[in-house]
Image 1: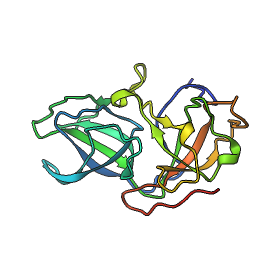
Image 2: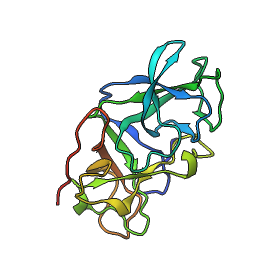
Image 3: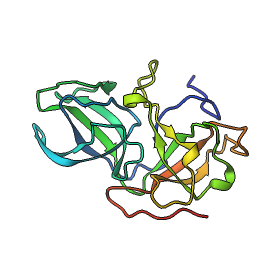
Image 4: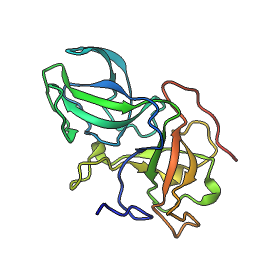
Length: 205
C-alpha cells in the first residue's frame, strides 16, 4: 500500500498531474552542485552541450531552483551517462567527464503538477487559489532518504498575486482541506507561472 499524502507532512516534489503533455531529454553537466531527483523542478542552464545522443540543453546545476524564473518542468526519469536508469544524480557525479547524466523532463508550459505546500508558519488557504507561489527546496535539493524522491514543496509564505512568482495555485487536491492556517501540508494542483517556454502572469488579487 502506498503512502497516504493527504494533508500529511511527506514531501514528494512536483508530480505531473492529469495528462502528460510533453517530455524531453536534458543533460546534467559533470560535477553538479545539487542533487537531481525524480519530481524535482529543474530550470534551464542557459547552455547546450554535446552528448553521445546529440546536442541537448543542460539544466542549471549550480544552485537550487527556488525563485528562478527559467523553469522547464519536473523530472520524470533520471539516467546516468550510459543511459541507465538511476534513482537520482548526486552532487559531484562525474559521469563520462562531460555529462553526469540525463533527465527526462515534463516540460510543456501547460503541464499540471501536484505538490505539497510546506505550511511553514503560514499555510496556503483556500482563498489563495489563483494566486502565485514560489517553490522551496532542501539544501542542495537533497532527496528523501527512504524513497529517493524530490523533497521540494511550495513555499507557503510566498503566496501572493505578484507576477514574479514561479507557480500558479489552481486548486487543492480533493482529499485535502486547506481551510485555514491550522491545516498545513495540503496538496495543490499547480502550473508553472514562470516558464522558459511561456510568459508570466500576475495572480488573482
